[in-house]
Image (cartoon, rainbow, N blue to C red):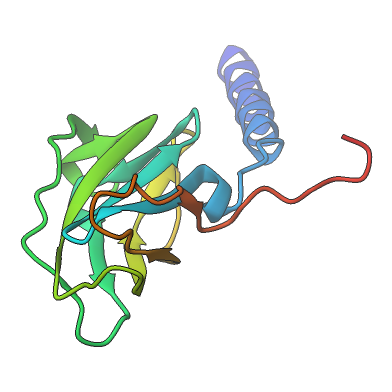
Length: 163
């Protein structure tokens, strides 16, 4: 009888844990990993991800490219991430909160529109990983001596009627 009661208790605990996981509402990918960029000058684009609380990006899954003909990025150096023992990929480096990357521009001219593409993948702390994601923004290269261009959000927050 004691063994049967223990089994019933374990089954109820599993149901309770399962129900708690079912109530977790995950953010859409673009909100969990908000991508933005700005042109600093004709030689540099600054790209960044604002990572929501409870989420992280994989460093080795982060790639940048440009969809603008004749413009390329030079060698991109990613900042060091925090080492994590991940249940899906083993020992990896991850980013939380915010990561900023400087992308060296090649062959860009003042006034030129440059489309920056970011390939990324991340997970939520609750144990759910997102599929690889692509986000892009188009920035305009400022003229020499001008201030940096504005920060362009790949998915700007939607305006709400009553907020």
